[in-house]
Length: 315
Image (cartoon, rainbow, N blue to C red; front, side):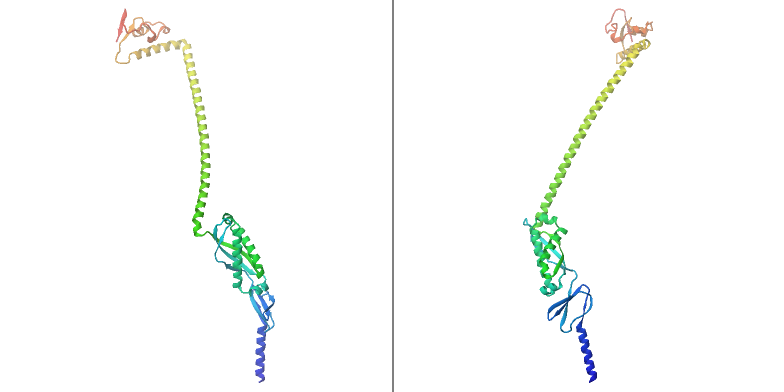
C-alpha cells in the first residue's frame, strides 16, 4: 500500500512538473494566460516556468511572414483600369494586441492585411494618372502603399514591413489601345529625329556644294592665270628668237621650206612661180643672197595661179 502511495505521489509530481514547464522557440513569443486572460509575454528562447493547471501558454510566431494577395482591379485618376498583384511581408509587433484583437490567429490577420493593402493600393493609384503610376513603379509606389497600409494595421499589433506590387498590368481589352498609343508616340519621336537628321544632312550637302563651287572657281581662275603666264612666256621666247639676227634668218628659211611643203599637198603637185621668187631660187639652187630677203609664198606677189610672162613650171 505504501509503495502504491509513493508511486501515485511520484506520478503526480511528474504531472505537476510537466504542467509547470514550457519552452519558447526562436522567433516565437509565448503568451502566458491565466483563466483565458493574457498575463505576460515571454520572448526569451528556452525553458520557463508557469503556474500549473492555472496558467496556460499560447505560442505566437513573431518572425517575418509572406502573404500573397489576390489580384485586384484598380482605376487611375484618368479613368484607366489596371490590374494590381501585390504581396506583403508582415510580422507581429505587439503580441498582446495581436492576441486581444485577432486571437493570435494568422488567417484572421491575413484577412485584415488583404483589406488594408487593397484599400491603400486603390486609394494611391486612384490619385495618380496611368502615366504617373507607370513612372512611380518600384520603390516609390511600394513605400507609399506600405505606409498607408500600416496606418490601418497598427491597431492589430501588426507591422507591414513591405507591401509591393509585383505585377501591374492592363486588362486585355485595354492593352491594344495602349499599345497603339505607345507605338504612335514612338513613331512621332522617330519622325522628329528623322526630320532633324535630314535637315542636318541638307545643311551639310549645301555647305559641301558651296565649298566645291568655290574650289572649282579658284581652280579655273588659277588655270587661266597659268595659261596666261604660259602664253606670255611663249611670246617672250619667240620674241627672243626674233631679236637674234642669225636665228631670225634661219627661222625665215625654215618657214619658207615649210610653206613649200604645205603647197605640194594633195593631188596637184604643180607650182607656178615667178622666176625671181625666193622659192624658185631655192629650187634652182641660185644665190639667194641674205636670208632676210626671203618671204613667205603666201605673202609673195610673184606666186599666182595665172600664167605670167617669163614663167617657169616646176613639176
